[in-house]
Length: 250
Ligand SMILES: Nc1ncnc2c1ncn2[C@@H]1O[C@H](COP(=O)(O)OP(=O)(O)O)[C@@H](O)[C@H]1O
Ligand SMILES: [Mg+2]
Image (cartoon, rainbow, N blue to C red; front, side, top):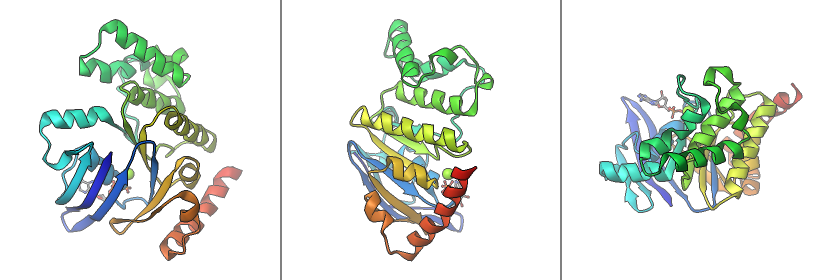
């Protein structure tokens, strides 16, 4: 379980997180919508301990991330995978070696076991054929899939997706939405997706909230969120759905 409790964070004069509260339980896919620069990535970075809050608490399976030891942080990062916006593959390693990286770092499995898990993970994302290519030799969509394969290979309990469809064409964006849904339906994992892509949000979410002025507002199931009368949410949904339709007609 992941829980954020009244988390505050400022950078200089900018008070980015002003009391973020959220709870993510097994099997859920929580989507956080919000315009660029509102603090969505900052929120995710707090969950895996890459940033420390000024005040408030973050719990992952009962571990308080804000005061965790290095060993506890390592446990948190094994349970909670963070899929960076850029995908961040290592350029000088093949797709296969990139995917093997988290397991090699854990040093828990034999090389035969690692090979097997890597094959499985690549296969589940239809990436076996590209396994021996370098990141520069594959398309943007394939790089996203390779990055997801690298996340799945460690069998995390929770996956944090940072703008997983940003920069993709509409067809590829839909493929990524399906991937996220498939990953969710094949286990009782938790997922937290931050995005401004409404099509993605409504296709994967079990609950949706909007990051606005440093807080999460209207965390609710998709159908309830869609009917929200909150003026900021109305503006966000109406403004962005126009963009969404333009995207579809391209
Ligand atoms: N390491 C940092 N140092 C200073 N300011 C930061 C840092 N990371 C994020 N910010 C600021 O925090 C705000 C929220 O950033 P971010 O969470 O990346 O937004 P987004 O919602 O687009 O993911 C922005 O104003 C950004 O400039
Ligand atoms: Mg961001």
